[in-house]
Amino acid sequence: GAVVSQHPSRVICKSGTSVKIECRSLDFQATTMFWYRQFPKQSLMLMATSNEGSKATYEQGVEKDKFLINHASLTLSTLTVTSAHPEDSSFYICSARGQGALQPQHFGDGTRLSIL
Amino acid sequence: GQNIDQPTEMTATEGAIVQINCTYQTSGFNGLFWYQQHAGEAPTFLSYNVLDGLEEKGRFSSFLSRSKGYSYLLLKELQMKDSASYLCAVRDYQAGANNLFFGTGTRLTVIP
Image 1 (tube, each protein chain N blue to C red):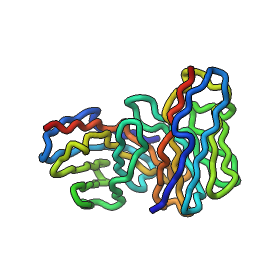
Image 2 (cartoon, rainbow over the protein chains, first blue to last red):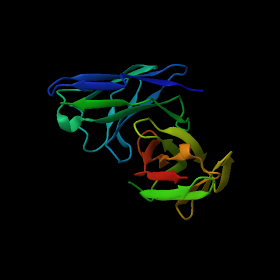
Image 3 (cartoon, helix red, strand yellow):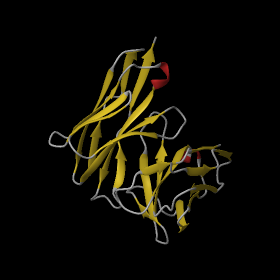
Image 4 (tube, rainbow over the protein chains, first blue to last red):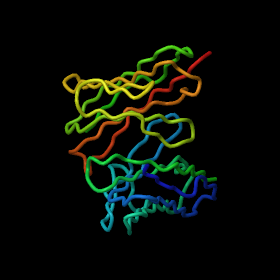
Protein backbone atom coordinates (compact mmCIF):
# COMPACT_ATOMS: atom_id res chain seq x y z
CA GLY A 1 0.00 0.00 0.00
CA ALA A 2 0.90 3.66 -0.25
CA VAL A 3 3.34 4.83 2.39
CA VAL A 4 3.89 8.35 3.65
CA SER A 5 6.92 9.01 5.80
CA GLN A 6 7.04 12.00 8.11
CA HIS A 7 10.15 13.17 9.91
CA PRO A 8 10.96 13.94 12.64
CA SER A 9 8.45 12.16 14.85
CA ARG A 10 9.13 14.38 17.80
CA VAL A 11 10.78 17.77 18.30
CA ILE A 12 11.48 19.61 21.51
CA CYS A 13 13.07 23.03 21.15
CA LYS A 14 13.33 26.50 22.62
CA SER A 15 10.99 29.34 21.86
CA GLY A 16 12.11 31.33 18.82
CA THR A 17 13.54 28.34 16.98
CA SER A 18 12.41 27.47 13.46
CA VAL A 19 11.46 23.85 12.92
CA LYS A 20 11.24 21.99 9.62
CA ILE A 21 9.06 18.92 9.18
CA GLU A 22 9.42 16.69 6.13
CA CYS A 23 6.72 14.60 4.47
CA ARG A 24 7.65 12.08 1.81
CA SER A 25 5.57 9.76 -0.30
CA LEU A 26 7.67 6.64 -0.63
CA ASP A 27 6.01 4.60 -3.33
CA PHE A 28 3.72 6.96 -5.21
CA GLN A 29 3.78 10.45 -6.64
CA ALA A 30 1.95 12.87 -4.40
CA THR A 31 0.41 15.53 -6.57
CA THR A 32 -1.28 17.08 -3.58
CA MET A 33 -0.15 17.20 0.02
CA PHE A 34 -2.10 18.37 3.04
CA TRP A 35 -0.88 19.61 6.40
CA TYR A 36 -3.04 19.21 9.49
CA ARG A 37 -2.64 20.28 13.09
CA GLN A 38 -4.23 18.52 16.03
CA PHE A 39 -4.43 19.81 19.59
CA PRO A 40 -5.06 17.38 22.47
CA LYS A 41 -8.50 15.79 22.39
CA GLN A 42 -9.44 17.73 19.30
CA SER A 43 -9.83 16.70 15.69
CA LEU A 44 -7.52 17.31 12.79
CA MET A 45 -7.65 20.86 11.48
CA LEU A 46 -6.53 21.42 7.92
CA MET A 47 -3.85 24.07 7.77
CA ALA A 48 -2.95 24.16 4.11
CA THR A 49 -3.01 22.29 0.83
CA SER A 50 -0.12 22.25 -1.58
CA ASN A 51 0.23 21.07 -5.15
CA GLU A 52 3.62 20.20 -6.55
CA GLY A 53 5.34 23.26 -7.97
CA SER A 54 2.64 25.68 -6.79
CA LYS A 55 2.16 27.95 -3.82
CA ALA A 56 0.26 26.44 -0.93
CA THR A 57 -3.35 27.36 -0.25
CA TYR A 58 -3.84 28.20 3.41
CA GLU A 59 -7.03 27.79 5.41
CA GLN A 60 -8.54 30.80 7.06
CA GLY A 61 -6.73 31.80 10.22
CA VAL A 62 -3.46 30.08 9.35
CA GLU A 63 -0.54 32.49 9.01
CA LYS A 64 1.31 31.73 5.81
CA ASP A 65 4.38 33.68 6.93
CA LYS A 66 4.62 31.58 10.06
CA PHE A 67 3.93 28.20 8.52
CA LEU A 68 6.03 27.98 5.37
CA ILE A 69 5.14 25.14 3.04
CA ASN A 70 7.26 23.97 0.17
CA HIS A 71 6.23 21.23 -2.27
CA ALA A 72 9.12 21.22 -4.69
CA SER A 73 8.81 17.65 -5.91
CA LEU A 74 6.20 14.95 -6.35
CA THR A 75 7.52 13.06 -3.35
CA LEU A 76 8.44 15.73 -0.83
CA SER A 77 6.72 18.54 1.00
CA THR A 78 8.08 20.46 3.95
CA LEU A 79 6.43 22.53 6.64
CA THR A 80 8.60 25.06 8.46
CA VAL A 81 7.29 26.57 11.65
CA THR A 82 9.17 29.85 11.87
CA SER A 83 10.08 31.42 15.21
CA ALA A 84 8.02 28.84 17.07
CA HIS A 85 6.39 29.75 20.37
CA PRO A 86 4.79 27.56 23.06
CA GLU A 87 1.33 28.06 21.55
CA ASP A 88 2.59 26.35 18.39
CA SER A 89 3.10 23.14 20.35
CA SER A 90 0.86 20.58 18.70
CA PHE A 91 0.70 17.35 16.71
CA TYR A 92 1.34 18.07 13.02
CA ILE A 93 0.27 15.47 10.48
CA CYS A 94 0.86 15.43 6.75
CA SER A 95 -1.21 13.61 4.19
CA ALA A 96 -0.51 12.87 0.55
CA ARG A 97 -2.71 12.08 -2.40
CA GLY A 98 -1.81 10.85 -5.85
CA GLN A 99 -2.96 12.33 -9.13
CA GLY A 100 -6.73 12.70 -9.32
CA ALA A 101 -9.05 14.34 -6.81
CA LEU A 102 -10.75 11.04 -5.94
CA GLN A 103 -7.55 9.29 -4.94
CA PRO A 104 -7.40 8.34 -1.25
CA GLN A 105 -5.37 10.38 1.22
CA HIS A 106 -2.56 8.60 3.01
CA PHE A 107 -1.31 9.95 6.32
CA GLY A 108 2.15 10.20 7.77
CA ASP A 109 2.82 9.19 11.36
CA GLY A 110 2.76 12.76 12.62
CA THR A 111 5.25 15.05 14.35
CA ARG A 112 4.79 16.04 17.94
CA LEU A 113 6.21 19.53 18.38
CA SER A 114 6.90 20.85 21.87
CA ILE A 115 8.15 24.40 22.26
CA LEU A 116 9.62 25.25 25.65
CA GLY B 1 -18.55 25.37 4.75
CA GLN B 2 -18.62 22.05 6.52
CA ASN B 3 -20.39 21.04 9.70
CA ILE B 4 -19.60 17.56 10.95
CA ASP B 5 -21.05 16.29 14.21
CA GLN B 6 -20.35 13.09 16.15
CA PRO B 7 -20.59 12.12 19.82
CA THR B 8 -17.58 13.02 21.92
CA GLU B 9 -17.29 9.83 23.91
CA MET B 10 -18.75 6.31 24.01
CA THR B 11 -18.15 3.26 26.16
CA ALA B 12 -18.89 -0.33 25.18
CA THR B 13 -18.16 -3.83 26.46
CA GLU B 14 -15.69 -6.26 24.95
CA GLY B 15 -17.46 -8.61 22.53
CA ALA B 16 -20.39 -6.26 22.01
CA ILE B 17 -21.45 -4.16 19.02
CA VAL B 18 -21.22 -0.37 18.96
CA GLN B 19 -22.55 2.17 16.46
CA ILE B 20 -20.91 5.56 16.11
CA ASN B 21 -23.04 8.14 14.34
CA CYS B 22 -21.97 11.10 12.24
CA THR B 23 -24.09 13.85 10.73
CA TYR B 24 -22.77 16.35 8.27
CA GLN B 25 -23.68 19.40 6.27
CA THR B 26 -21.53 20.29 3.32
CA SER B 27 -22.02 22.09 0.05
CA GLY B 28 -20.00 19.78 -2.16
CA PHE B 29 -20.29 16.25 -0.76
CA ASN B 30 -17.96 13.84 -2.50
CA GLY B 31 -17.53 10.95 -0.10
CA LEU B 32 -17.39 10.13 3.60
CA PHE B 33 -14.48 8.46 5.34
CA TRP B 34 -13.98 6.83 8.72
CA TYR B 35 -10.57 6.78 10.33
CA GLN B 36 -9.27 5.21 13.54
CA GLN B 37 -6.76 7.14 15.59
CA HIS B 38 -4.95 5.85 18.65
CA ALA B 39 -3.59 8.43 21.05
CA GLY B 40 -0.45 10.07 19.74
CA GLU B 41 -0.63 8.38 16.37
CA ALA B 42 -1.80 9.40 12.93
CA PRO B 43 -5.20 8.31 11.63
CA THR B 44 -5.54 5.03 9.80
CA PHE B 45 -8.15 4.52 7.12
CA LEU B 46 -11.11 2.27 7.97
CA SER B 47 -13.81 2.77 5.37
CA TYR B 48 -15.19 4.95 2.62
CA ASN B 49 -18.75 5.57 1.35
CA VAL B 50 -19.73 7.66 -1.63
CA LEU B 51 -23.07 6.01 -2.47
CA ASP B 52 -25.96 5.27 -0.12
CA GLY B 53 -25.91 1.98 1.67
CA LEU B 54 -23.74 -0.27 3.76
CA GLU B 55 -20.09 -1.10 3.17
CA GLU B 56 -18.83 -4.10 5.12
CA LYS B 57 -15.22 -4.79 5.87
CA GLY B 58 -14.65 -7.56 8.38
CA ARG B 59 -15.65 -6.42 11.86
CA PHE B 60 -16.24 -2.88 10.61
CA SER B 61 -19.17 -1.63 8.55
CA SER B 62 -20.10 1.88 7.49
CA PHE B 63 -23.44 3.19 6.32
CA LEU B 64 -24.31 6.34 4.40
CA SER B 65 -27.52 8.21 3.67
CA ARG B 66 -26.75 11.25 1.54
CA SER B 67 -30.29 12.61 1.67
CA LYS B 68 -30.15 12.65 5.48
CA GLY B 69 -26.53 13.76 5.73
CA TYR B 70 -25.91 10.79 8.00
CA SER B 71 -23.42 8.01 8.39
CA TYR B 72 -22.55 5.47 11.02
CA LEU B 73 -19.63 3.19 11.75
CA LEU B 74 -20.53 -0.20 13.19
CA LEU B 75 -17.95 -2.17 15.11
CA LYS B 76 -18.74 -5.81 15.90
CA GLU B 77 -17.13 -8.25 18.33
CA LEU B 78 -15.38 -5.42 20.10
CA GLN B 79 -11.84 -6.00 21.26
CA MET B 80 -9.84 -4.06 23.83
CA LYS B 81 -7.55 -2.81 21.06
CA ASP B 82 -10.54 -1.05 19.47
CA SER B 83 -10.30 1.61 22.18
CA ALA B 84 -9.39 4.67 20.13
CA SER B 85 -10.84 7.79 18.59
CA TYR B 86 -12.96 7.35 15.48
CA LEU B 87 -12.98 10.24 13.07
CA CYS B 88 -15.68 10.95 10.54
CA ALA B 89 -14.38 12.94 7.56
CA VAL B 90 -16.20 14.42 4.60
CA ARG B 91 -14.62 15.14 1.24
CA ASP B 92 -15.83 18.38 -0.28
CA TYR B 93 -15.27 19.01 -3.99
CA GLN B 94 -16.07 22.67 -3.57
CA ALA B 95 -13.32 23.15 -1.01
CA GLY B 96 -10.06 23.56 -2.84
CA ALA B 97 -8.60 20.25 -3.90
CA ASN B 98 -11.39 17.93 -2.75
CA ASN B 99 -10.17 18.43 0.79
CA LEU B 100 -11.09 16.17 3.69
CA PHE B 101 -12.71 17.83 6.67
CA PHE B 102 -12.78 15.99 9.96
CA GLY B 103 -15.28 15.86 12.77
CA THR B 104 -14.06 16.20 16.34
CA GLY B 105 -13.85 12.42 16.72
CA THR B 106 -15.56 9.95 19.03
CA ARG B 107 -13.40 8.54 21.80
CA LEU B 108 -14.42 4.91 22.27
CA THR B 109 -13.47 3.06 25.41
CA VAL B 110 -13.88 -0.71 25.40
CA ILE B 111 -14.23 -2.23 28.86
CA PRO B 112 -13.88 -5.89 29.87
